[in-house]
Amino acid sequence: MQTYVIRRLLLTIPTLFGVTVFIFLIMRVLPGDPLASTGDAQRMIILTEEQTAAARKALGLDRPLYIQYLDWVADILKGDLGYSFFRTEEPIREMLQRRAPVSTQIAFFGVIFSWIIGLPVGIIAAMRRNTLLDYVSRVGVTVGMAVPSFWVALTLIIVTVIFFQWKPPIEVAFIWDDPWKSLQQTVPPAAVFAIGGGALIARMSRATLLEVLNEDYIRTARAKGLMNRAVLWRHAFKNAVLPVITLSGLQLAGILSGMVAVERALGIPGLGFALINAIDQRDWMVIQNLVLLFGVIYVFVNLAVDLAYAWIDPRIRYR
Amino acid sequence: MMEEQSSPGGRHVVTAVVNSCKTFVGPVVRFYGSSPPGAIALALLAIVVTIALFANQIAPYDALHTDFTNLKGSPTVSHPMGTDIVGRDVLSRIIVGTRVSLLVAFVSVAMGVGVGFVWGVSTGFIGGKFDLLGQRLLDVLLSFPSLILALLLMIPLGRGLGTVVLAIAVITVPGAARLVRSTALSVTQMAYVDGARAIGASSKRIIVRHVAPQCFAPMMIIATIDLGGAIFTEATLSFLGMGIPPPNPSWGRMIGASLQGMFTPPWWLVIYPGVAITLTVLCFNLVGDGLRDHLDPRLRGKLD
Image (cartoon, rainbow over all chains, first blue to last red; front, side, top):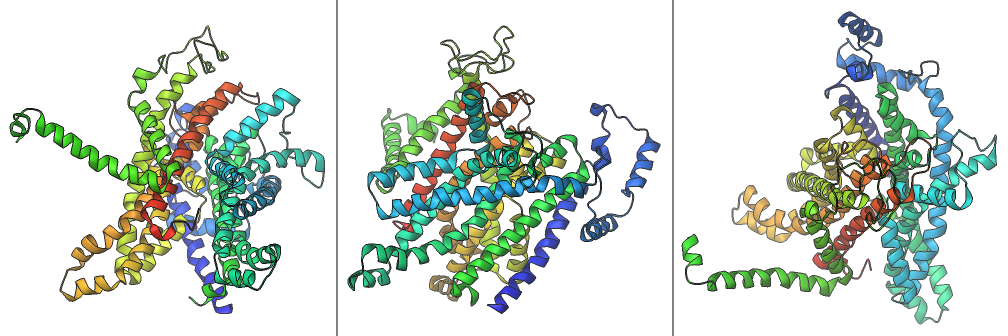
């Protein structure tokens, strides 16, 4: 296990390096540098040649690319994420600290709700295989995996506005300041993510449970006269569910992806909304560091998933 | 050649048509046998493709025509799905929007899966340092949630049909490359590849004749599933205003454009395009699942 953990940890270093280089190259080398797009004619900010040159110098954009890259990485490692072009009074780091709790809470609730919905559905469907219940749940799962989360979010809001005249609050609310308001803000998007995530978990838990129920040791357990319930919970369930737990990683990826559109749809001031706002305003530094944040989170989620796999299934460690 | 075929009465033509029908119908019937939902979804997709091809003939109104006397009109007999914020007919826009969705999906998936196929087969077959490098590059692409990666690629390229296609193609590459590589890797270790090598076949011949064909089935499966994903991503990008530029209709953009500030949008501007997205993605997913059961007998029964 130890060698596996060390090898897997070492493997994240080149990946993280690759991620930073990739983001940097996309942001700098492809057409349109930060100033070219902030100061374009459409936005009515027209800079003269000298002003552009001065601004480039002030931002350090006239230096060689590799120095800019190293500078950026060094700043990140020091915890300095720079400033936005437009809201210069607040460092990006503080902006993230203000917005991250909302998104984290949504992701956390989203995963939990998915388990609450998905696991029972998957188990019941596997136990009552090929009955009406199974068919209904499979249709639900298939549809659940096809609906766009931002659309579900908007539909939810339309329904609650029409019938209850209620909408999630749009200003940031921390759970430790105003729990009620914070829950109003984070539970609806989490419920939206739970539809796709729950479908995924139901599908996988049904499949793995069916697979395990076909194993020889289950037949042995039945043959020695164990009750059905004991076979299911003692022998099958544990082996079937552990691999599904790692799905939460995949699901977090789905939530990170869906976050942008869902927060936009509901007007929730989280990290996803910050990213789409920054893209609309072409706020270079915010985009660059936010995308990096999403990438780093995802790399560590993948790391955690792989380690969890290895911990659950010893066969993987020795490969 | 042309005259020879057409001159002896229509007989040759008829046999040719019948033969092509046989070759086409046979697999579809067998597909229905192994996966009824998949086959039904395939039939639905045929209808969707037909709608896309004849969109301008089917649509009751001009999808770009604005009617300022009927803004945000709720659904009526003449406008079954209502009109949008500048008075365009929603039904017509959904019908014409089918085109963009399918076009983006097919082109981007063909590009992405094609690159992934070449990538996967070559890294899996050659192995060694080349494989290692290819794997690390994939790791970088896989280090981003797919939509974030697509958004990142859209930023410097600007929005537009071509850039959406390119961005979706790029996010399709790693999944396809990974799957194809693992197949290529196991095929390369098969005895018949050693056999081919022993009788003196060149590497090129082994790849083309022995390895690549074996990777074809997994490629088709992942391509079908990716088609649904591509429609999904295009819709999300367009919803965020990063996809197909207005005024061209796109399902995601229709939903996105209905959001005006903090007002709640009229329900028909949100519900109908969303249903179109969901149904199309659903069909592609079902066909993909069906294809997996149909083409990969090892998985049959296991996942259903």
